[in-house]
Structures are given as C-alpha cells and as structure tokens.
Amino acid sequence: MNRNHTVMATKVSQLLLTQLAPRLFSRTSRFASRSAIVEPSKIPMDTTIGTARVLGMHARNLSTHASNSDKEKKDDGDKKAVSSYWGIAPPSLTKADGSAWKWNCFRPWEAYEADTSIDIKKHHKPVTWNDKIAFGIVQALKYPTYFYFQKKHIHHAVLLETVAAVPGMVGGMLLHAKSLRRFEQSGGWIKALLEEAENERMHLMTFIDVYRPKWHERALVFAVQGVFFNAYFLAYLASPKLAHRITGYLEEEAVNSYTEFLNDLEKGEMEDIPAPAIAIDYWCLPQNSTLKDVVRVIRADEAHHRDLNHYASDIQCGGHELKEYPAPIGYH
Image 1 (cartoon, rainbow, N blue to C red):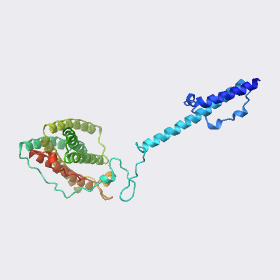
Image 2 (image 1 turned 120 degrees about the horizontal axis):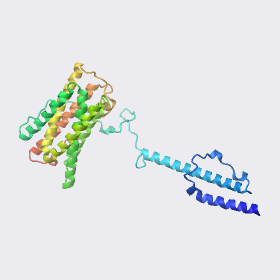
Image 3 (image 1 turned 180 degrees about the vertical axis):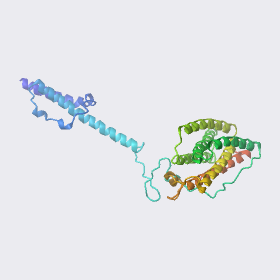
Image 4 (image 1 turned 135 degrees about the horizontal axis):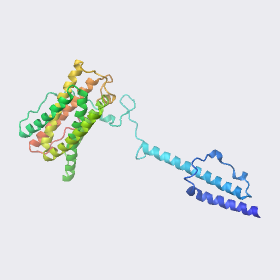
C-alpha cells in the first residue's frame, strides 16, 4: 500500500515539475551537464530518498534544457543584431577588381577622381567692405599657424582639416533649419555644404593614417575647434555672405599650404611615402600612388571648396538667396 502511494506521489511530482520547472528553475543549475542524466526507472521509488532524488534530477534536467534554450535564443538574437538592425544581412561590397570592400566610413559609390586640372592660383580680390573684413580675419588667423607649424606640413594639415570641416557642417545645418522653418527648398545647397564637410573629414582620416597627433596637438585641436565652431556659427547667423567669404579665403590659404607641402615633397625635403590605402580607394588612385599624389588631389578638393564658397558669397552679395541658384553638386 505504501509503495502504491509512493509511486502515485512520484508521478504527481513529475507532472508538477514538468509544468513548473521551466519557471522555477530556468535560472539555476547552469553548470549541469546532460551527460549526468540518469534514468529515473533505475532509482528505487519505495523510499523518500529515492523520490527526492528523482525530483532533484528532473529539476536539474529541465533547468539545463531551459537555460540551454535561453542561451541559444540569446545567441541567435545577438547574431541577428550584429548582422543588421532590421534582421537582414547587409550586402557584401566589393571594389572594381572584385576584392572585398573594407571601409565603413564611405562606400564604393562615394569614391571619385579629383579634378586636378582646376586653377589653383585663383584669388578673389577683396573689393567690398565685406570682402576686406573676411580677408583680414583670415590673414590674422594665418600667421600664428604658420609660425607654430613652420615646415611641419603633416602636422599643419591635421590641424587645418579639423577646422576646415566646420564651415560646411555649420552652413548646411543652418540652411537645413531655415528650409524647415520656411517650408522651402534650398536649391541643393544643404547637400553641397554637407558634402564639403564630409570631404574635409575624409582628408583628416587620410592624414591620421600617416601621422598620429601628440597629446598637446589634440588639446590644441580641441580648443581651436571649440572656439572656431561657435564663432563661425554666430558669423553665419549674422551674415551668411561674410561667413562664406571667410571660408573662401580659408580655402585659398589651404590651397597655398598644400602647394608648399607638395613643393617640399618634390624637392625631396620630405619622404614621399606610399599613399594610405584609404586614400587610394577614396580618390580612385593607382595602387603605386604616393603621398605626393594624395596631396595633389586634396589640394584640388580645397580649390573646389574655395570656388563654391566664393560663389555662395557672390550670390548673397548680389541680393539673392542661395536657393535661387543651383548648387554645384556632384563634384565628389
């Protein structure tokens, strides 16, 4: 009689464990091994100890299966999240020669060939008070940097690009806000200015493959960028035509700076090292390109930014809005 009661109690306990164990034991016994499973039929059922052993084994086995199931679901979730936020694996990108694309900061369709035939000696002669103020500001900023860097061209280029990427972003951001406020299109100038900012940033990404700034240079960049960003933001709010003219003259100085850089490379005063891989892919340069080729295409980019900003200032100085004239989009 006692044996029958014990068997009945055991079956009831097994049924209860089957229903409740996933909830009660899902976070326990994580280190239980499947190899430790023993057939319940081999354990004597006529004792309280035997019944307890069966109950404990069922709890361990069910919790092991539950924890393994949770782990597999978590691994699947992590894998899905890593592959793509939307659960769809991104397409594999390749270069023109069929090799894998390794850059996440830009895509193959964003690569281009710079127009190195652009006139690098062009200069906008300051005539109006607006022009003279902009030219004076740039000249005042130029001499301290030349004195600080002198012939350290790569050091100078790194600082220059951290500043040169600011005007396009500020101008594009403010034009974007203006377009939203007034419910009007921008004539493509938002895109043109943001393209300029992104292109300047890619210049910086190229140069940090050649030279890593020291701590004091990073501190200088932090300070200069903080001051320049806010100053340019206020200048653009007050007078966009003045802000664009300032940027135009800054780009003229950038062209001059890269010309000196290139001259020293051609004279052999600096080592003409192989071009960084990111520069070869971004500007579609030959595989045997050198730093000299990189400086040449960056100088062409700066000349384009020079012309774009002088053009924007000319439009506004003539009493027109930028949206009335199509922006020169597509250079990059």
